[in-house]
Image (cartoon, rainbow, N blue to C red; front, side, top):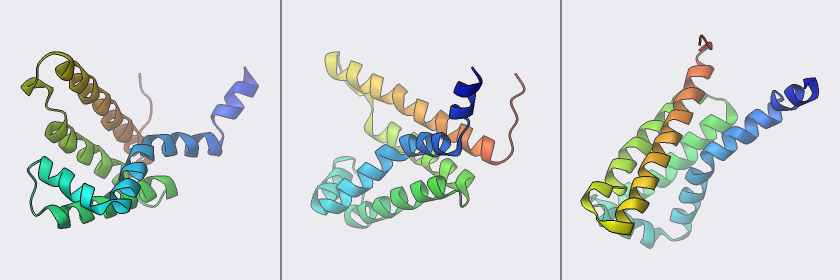
Length: 135
């Protein structure tokens, strides 16, 4: 049991967990940067304008906020930024209440999975700001 505890409280496991939380944002920013016209089309598809500047801003935002979380430099702020971004994007992109059937179920699943990410980032910020488990 002590070995298991020692492994799970090690710094590399902490960093790996943070990387897992940020993975979707790093991958999303990389894909948007690699295919910028598709990123612009995605913004247009969500009804956002001006699409090109918003796509560029999203790329920078996803890389920068993830870097903040991973590096520990204002980790709490990067985590809260990604939580807010995810909540907003979730409401824009996973509008399951507008759909029917299989598409509704898939979008509802995505919607609630994204709330899990929001919660994870809030916990990261909470710990980084000195939160203590009191339950």
